[in-house]
Image 1 (cartoon, helix red, strand yellow):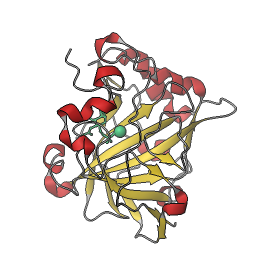
Image 2 (cartoon, rainbow, N blue to C red; image 1 turned 90 degrees about the horizontal axis):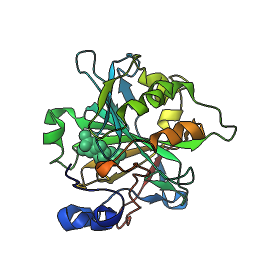
Image 3 (cartoon, protein in one colour; image 1 turned 180 degrees about the horizontal axis):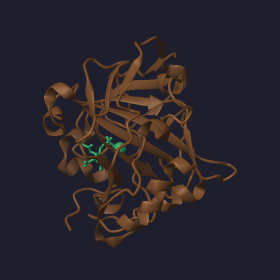
Image 4 (cartoon, rainbow, N blue to C red; image 1 turned 135 degrees about the horizontal axis):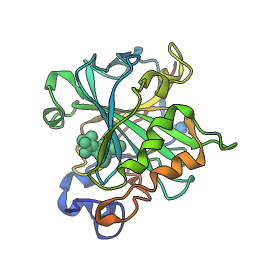
Length: 267
Ligand code: SG4
Ligand code: ZN
């Protein structure tokens, strides 16, 4: 197995720039979002289409995260509006977590680290594919959901299908089809649309949070977290990374904001 990057030791975030120049760029992600520094604005409605189509999903351990993608045979999932120009097509979603529930998110809010962060990655339709989109400054948009560990330790049943499948992708490179079709609308917006939850977000221009750290991402971070139980979060820490070690954490530390300004959309 070839390890191109990791989260500790000689492959850790401090070493990424040795092989990937862009990782020391000025517009990197993640960042610490300070609410007293954000600019409140009224952006156009963020629009989702195909969010309510139940889909067949595949879950894969790629050595860096647990990642879900959907076959493109049914109606695709699109996003537009908000800070975006044009239409963005859903590609995959994946998670970042930490060694314990007090850390794990990539972006922070007011220095607060959440236990986990879900990223749904979209590419701009006009570029036709992920590979081509990644070479353009407006190529990608990622929507991010923060997770807290539920204080009463109640499980979030909407995530059971994913959590229960994790032991089956323990080894790097393993992949399975989820037993049940997944409804992203329920997963990400449990109150059910229409709702303000997905209009209350921070947005800024940044990068992929892993090598090659390309500065091509419009980030959209929903302000209100979702909940999982401690045990549901812990299940992610058991999948293996390269060299067979447990992937106990896979978040990048925050990067300088530099000359950027984070916007907060007022729903
Ligand atoms: C994760 O490592 C995913 O496995 C990568 O997806 C993803 O790269 C990478 O994170 C960076 O994405 O939303 N955190 S992020 O900025 O989506 C891309 C794959 O390698 C390009 C497929
Ligand atoms: Zn990510």
